[in-house]
Image (cartoon, rainbow, N blue to C red; front, side, top):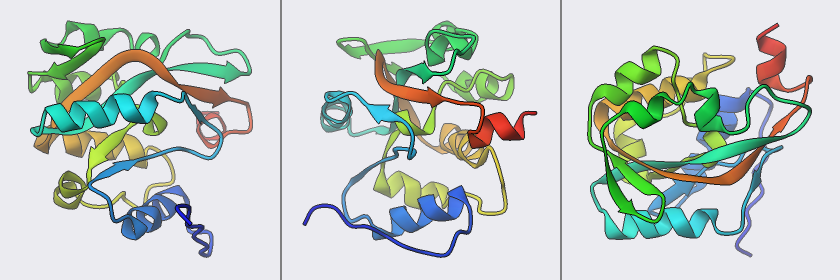
Length: 177
């Protein structure tokens, strides 16, 4: 009874995400792509951060690849470790608040550390930022994180709490070739 299955005509990933968001009624929204995996403690770690820090609008975690071989060990490493150069304040066990507007600059230079399956957002911030852009075939999520970086406070957990499935047939792999 806690799980709702939505069905719609295939309009792409951003449209599916937007449909899921519209069906949500909670204060926090988390994303999980169909082929990725969450560690059991992922949601609780992020919920705790939001509960203790009401100014945080978005929280993401580190992630690690599985499946086919990837050229990186963790997502933060893949993003060029630029995240560690951005000023931050400790929020507790391996958790940090980004206290600089330079996150947007870092992201524009190619250091986007957010993987959609690691992200949890406040529903009210998502309303402010707006929906995923359904016109984009790829990188709709990256564009969304840019918008969040302009309008909301970011936090992150520097622990691998998500596993990103790597395979040659994935959307991102197919679009990059």
